[in-house]
Length: 368
Picture 1 (cartoon, rainbow, N blue to C red):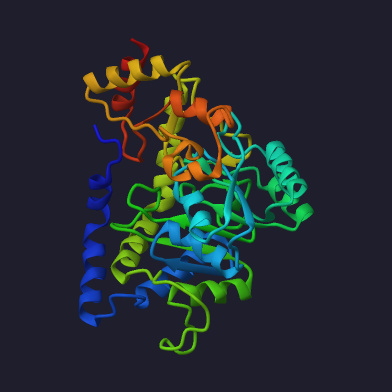
Picture 2 (cartoon, rainbow, N blue to C red):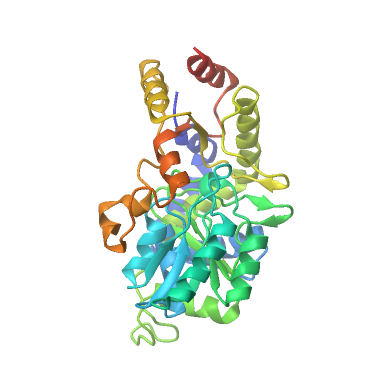
């Protein structure tokens, strides 16, 4: 049994993928070649936005918009401590301050009521200037963007949708990639749409912001690649990774539906999984359940291990308790829901090619 089955997926796309890769070997444009531009057009069309800007990773997809807005020392950016470290890392890299907000115990996404309180407290304190919010669509479930965008408008804040795990998800008919001022996603191999290395993309309808992001990803250049107009970075996407994504896009919607069926089958037997609100459609990047205690989680992990059932804990450590973020002054007990999740959560196998027989084996092991 595989936690993530990329081998079966590769068999489906191997021949057309090899054809695309051979074309790249022939034309020799290995970075930002025609495949990259084709991918950007198809990603924009898929999400229903004017601009899809590819880049070298999901981390850069978060970092580049912050750079475009000039966010830095003295600025506050609000996000959740219960996510992968990259979300907070990009804020800190620019000298700005991550201000953490706890999550809902149901969806595991940022708590909007606590978000507004944190913004108000930051304004009242006066040491930092609130600049942006980075909500996270954890495990594929979109955050509450209607409320988040309303709060952002009230306090004149920018919003970056961290859709690293949620490409393909939606709220109603509105797809991930269309929320906030700009959205970011990751094409890391384990994502619902993943390449065979690192890759990412940004999505926006803001023409000016799109041009800024395009320049920043190529060392701050636009018209002349040897004349940097702003401080940038090397954030370009390789043509071969674009080729992989183009072929995976051809089967992506079918795989989303297959993931949805796996999710539905799991939920016939498990009632302790991440909550998906009505009219929200998850990309099902992960299938995560919570146990009543750390002890119960560890007992289940051991049981799964003995039965050769792969599992992963996302995330063992909330960001505010990581050593690298001690300088912020947070302590144990500051974000109780995030801290409890880190002690009780476990992710089970989730991919389009997981069979009912395999899920039955997982369920039977859990119920023993």
